Image (cartoon, rainbow, N blue to C red; front, top):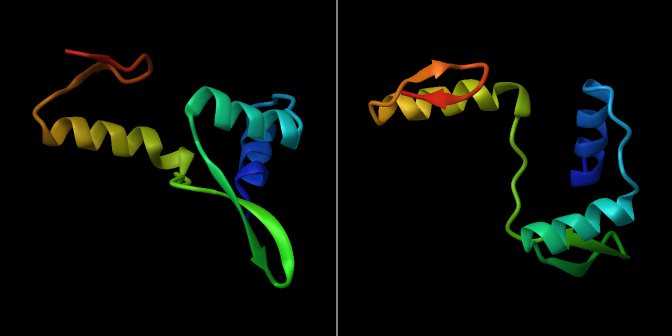
Length: 84
């Protein structure tokens, strides 16, 4: 699944209207300094994002809390992400 497909799925999960592929791609490159490269896959030219990795967003908060606890930090309110 492509990055844009994951983004659209995330938007649907939260009841948000997804942006167009072009708008989403522009924001990734302009706002987050991500780079893309044109390559051939199965004889077709496609653009691939470089140095990007998808995260299981459903488990991301749990992983973040676990990582903080490994460094001896605790969240006072996990809903708000405030550290104590």
